[in-house]
Amino acid sequence: MVARRKINKFTVATAAIIVLVFVSMLPARKKENKKQLSTGERFHHETTLTWRGVLGDVFGAKPKKPPQYKTYPGAEKVKLPKPEYRGVVLEDAIEQRRSVRNYSKKPISTAQLSQLLFAAQGVTGKTYGQPLRSAPSAGALYPFEIYVVANNVQDLPRGIYHYSVLDHALELVKAGDFRSKITDAGLEQEMLGDAAVTFVLSAIFDRVRHKYGERGFRYVYIEAGHISQNIYLQSVSLGLGSVCVGAFLDEKVNQLIDVDGRKEAAIYLHPVGAL
Ligand SMILES: Cc1cc2nc3c(=O)[nH]c(=O)nc-3n(C[C@H](O)[C@H](O)[C@H](O)COP(=O)(O)O)c2cc1C
Image 1 (tube, rainbow, N blue to C red):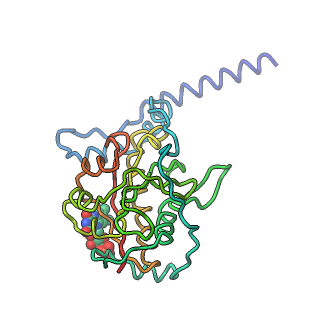
Image 2 (image 1 turned 90 degrees about the vertical axis):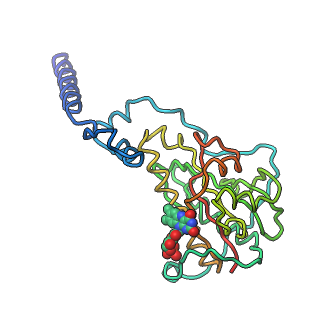
Image 3 (image 1 turned 135 degrees about the vertical axis):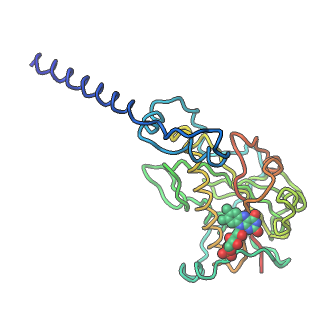
């Protein structure tokens, strides 16, 4: 019995050493001359996965996990109507989707806004008690926060609101008319101020970095696309127009939603307006 236990310990220790030696022999990443790489190429290269990188990510130092839900204690809260709209069939929505940059002056309703936010990040299920959302997320870590620059929504005063996912409500961040500020921050793309609402998709990087390390940045950008497509297709189904906007002055948008641009930063804008 004692001998067997010794052999088992010996076998496990030997196996562990073999694995460690093998892994240490794996290339971390193919050596590239950093000077020859552009910033974008370096980003891609340095977030490339290798087996050694995976193990490094498992054992390496990572940031602390930030809270899963951002809240604005004391903020004025606006409960959104239940998202129960049923519109065009998916295949028609895919066929009809186009980027729309001209909107009428008609407001959208709070029911339509509710449906758009639900499509973007609404809670649609649960696993082991943890809420799951409408768009996929690496490790179900949900790095995104959604801000609504409300320009022209029935029964909703103009202002910037934060979408509170768990109670499907809006929290008022700043009251006021931000149409010219969001247009200015978006390189004068007029649809940002003309739209009934402009969504700002903003990411808290450490929500994914604490698990996936630097690779997590890639997951954030990929995830923005999932959310964007949901907003596009939901807009079609509601008979509204939308376009995703990647060209904006980061610092100005970050200032508008009061985030530092490092731990949390605006990634994508999405105006939606009536036709
Ligand atoms: C990552 C990304 C960034 C984009 N940024 C902008 C933008 O800043 N302004 C804009 O008007 N359209 C923007 N678009 C929309 C594209 O111009 C549009 O999708 C493309 O012309 C194809 O047209 P469609 O969407 O109608 O099929 C962006 C699209 C993507 C995927």
